[in-house]
Amino acid sequence: MIRSELIQKLADENPHLYQRDVEKIVNTIFEEITDAMSHGDRVELRGFGAFSVKKRDQRIGRNPRTGESVEVEEKHVPFFKTGKLLRDRLNGN
Image 1: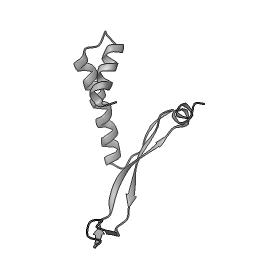
Image 2: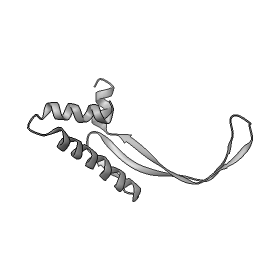
Image 3: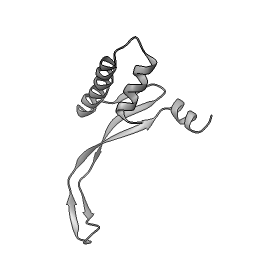
Image 4: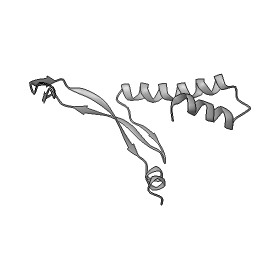
């Protein structure tokens, strides 16, 4: 499912809301999650999962095309851990 499909589904399920308002709501939620993570905060949605940021240390990597060693800078990457309810639902429990 992509963002536009999510917006359309929510708009269809809530006919009392305008589609542009649903779009603003969805965009606000994503922006808030992104802003929190950019500040190093953890975002937990009970039953769904938790978004956090993990630090990857600097390392020596390898260019797969040439085999040459390259230095990979330290970076921060997003991480998602599923919640128990989501995990159970995916596994048919």
